[in-house]
Length: 323
Image (cartoon, rainbow, N blue to C red; front, side):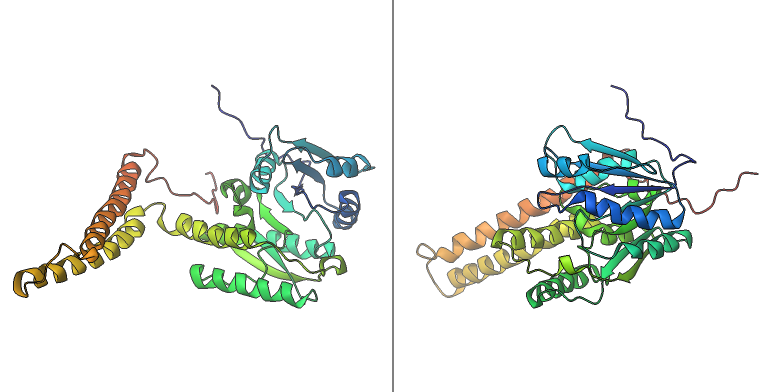
């Protein structure tokens, strides 16, 4: 099977504007027109890539109304239903511009901020993200956003204010090296920073259409917490899994050994019987569980050691002058 070849940047197109509409996308034709006007003012050549992750009748109808005579518009639909992260990665692999600009599928932030986003990329930043400031939406929206970002800062130690704002600018190299899947598109700034890219954050005016109350079910909030833990493991322990699983296994093992030792002392020196002591089962169970969890970490270390690319770091080209 031949390897897929990714399209190289072309001299004609400088910016690839990417959008992966979700089920609750707004009027894409109206969103397109506003970003189109801002790009026209910059005088740069651009293309628009809309990637539909599965059938999106409303999105397709909205995009069919586009009347574009200046920029190339490509609408791609994945053969099966995938998540937004996979759709974005699909678009990144097919982008032809030097810069990639992700835009929201609804009115979220003032499109005029793309001028500052492009200026940041021109000045050497490899990823430029935006934040809605000042926030004027519902109090509950701001509260849940603060809690979410407090978790992120606590775990990753990186201070980002609005990870869910979809207007971002990336160099083509940074976009293709993110390797998005699942719900990782929500953590693009964190993922980019963990890979060594220079990330900048700039404010933008929040749109009035974005100020309505956003209330989700308990399952959504549980998945967001799992996403945070998932990314924490990816950014910290994928190359050293024994530290993660070994620490957990040691905790279980030490507790199990302590319980078993206390019961053994009582049996040997105090004459306490063990037949009616459920703690004995718990102690043995914790020891076995600790060994099993540690073994998972050891297997991960073996797999990494045997991998031919274990020592291949991410290469970020800064300068390469040929003599």
